[in-house]
Structures are given as structure tokens and as C-alpha cells.
Image 1: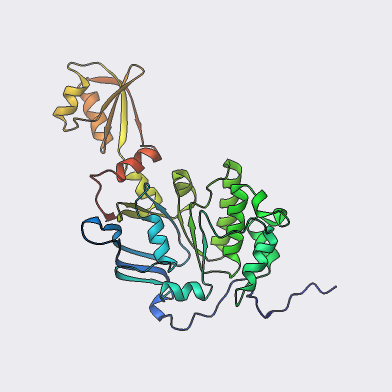
Image 2: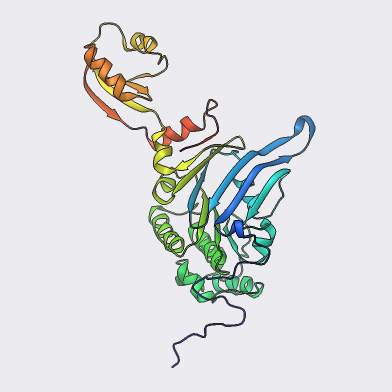
Length: 334
């Protein structure tokens, strides 16, 4: 039995995913997966106009894993639609792998895992894969894509009988068919339980180690913390924060929990310190929220106002809420 696959098979790309740079891609784009400058996307006009994406500047290098975060209506999905060429910017410039988004998609260099749509319920998983593969000028074997996506065991199952998580794995396998350089994931683990999410991200990390760029939008903040190199946080169509995960988490306010001794009330002291809304009480303890908790704790101790102090970092949820508040401003962490 011959176990050696030919190096080139018509209609396929090598499993390594190595490609010759696409014609038309400029040399400046060889290290850049995505470059957006002043990108706006407006729907409607006049008083009823909605700016879903409002002046976003963003550059993502090849091989990065970037989490796109933000509340509902932040503009995440619209921005991904722009990157996929589903719609065009109202103004500004956007290139993907050094070329227009539609060209990158047509050349099979961009793969996407979207939340809904695109699946025919009466086909099996493998039939769906084969049908889509037949429309691609180049692709890896269907079986290989299913295996890498962790969907090989459901190949014979009808799509309508697949769980939400299994359908997401099918979408992931479809995205891998052309060995894309850039993977875009919109809420990729929606419908998955905890174990399925863990297995999915283990698979995704393996793909990233192949040199693929991964950009994913998620509501699971822990996913962003665990799997991304960098966080881009959006609010009301704008980029609020852009930086490495640990630096983004450090922007959150920290807390000082203590047993209050007085004199005076914690609220009175907080007002004097310029922290009028920073006091909470829980289980007989007082909690102050502040940016410089070391300085605050030192003051409380030296003034004899409190004892049994503990300092804690803000939770991921608290950081998210803080950064997406109306007072947040756009910035890049350095």
C-alpha cells in the first residue's frame, strides 16, 4: 500500500498550508494580516444614520491571536463583515493580507466561522464538506479538515441532528478547507459546553501554531484571557482599548477590602480622597475601589482608619464593564 501522498494534487493545497504570496499583494503586506485606517461603516443617512463602525484604526500582524471584545452593538460583527468583504467601508481603507478583502476571500486565504447560516439541514456533515470543497479551486482533503476540526466522528451525521456545538465544529472544518492564512471567528464557541469549548480552543491553538492569524469575537472574557495574545475592545463602533492581554487586565481598578475602625465613615474618607463612588459594604467589611490601591492601603493603615486589609485585582467582568463605560476613551496600550 502506498502511504506517501503526492506533493501536489490537482484541486488541493499541501497540508502544510504554505503558499506563494498572492499576486497583487504588496511587499509591505507580507508581515501584516489586516490593516485598517480610519474605517467607518454607516447605515442609512440623515438623522436616522447609524455608524456601526466609527473611525477604527487597527493593524494585526501575521501569526497573532487577537480577541475582539465589546458589548452587543459595539460593532464587532460589522467589522468582521468588512474584513470578509460582505460590505464595504463607507470611508477609510482596509486591506487583508495586503489586498482588498474580497480578493483575499476569493483566493481562499481567509476562512470564517460565523454564528449562523450556511448549513443545509438535510445533508450529512461530510456531504456538506464535499459540496463546499467542490466549489473551491484548491482545498485540502475533506477528511483532513474534519479531523483537524475535531469533527471526524460526526462525518456521517445529518446536519439537523448535530448540536449547536457540533455545527460550529462543522463550520470550523469548512473554514480550514482552503488552508487560510487568516481565520475569523464570530462567537465560535456559542452553543458549546465547557468541555467542548476547551477542546475547540486546543484545536484552535494547534492551528495558530501553524502560523495562522486568528481573530475572534467573543462574549466569554475568560476565552480572551486564556487564548488571545492581544485584546481589541470596541464600544459604540469605536476601538476603546488595544493591547496585550495582561496590560488590558491591568487597566482595571483594584479593590482594598478592610475592617473599618474610623473615625468617620468610609464614605466621608472616600470623598476626601476623591473617590466619592468607590465604597461598598459586604459581610461586615468595607471595600474601596481605586486605581492606586497600594497608596490607598498605606493611607488607611498609617491613619489608623482600618485593619485586616486585603488588595485584589479587578475581575475580568469588572475590567470589561469599566472599559466599555460611557467614560472610556479610545487608546492603545504601550
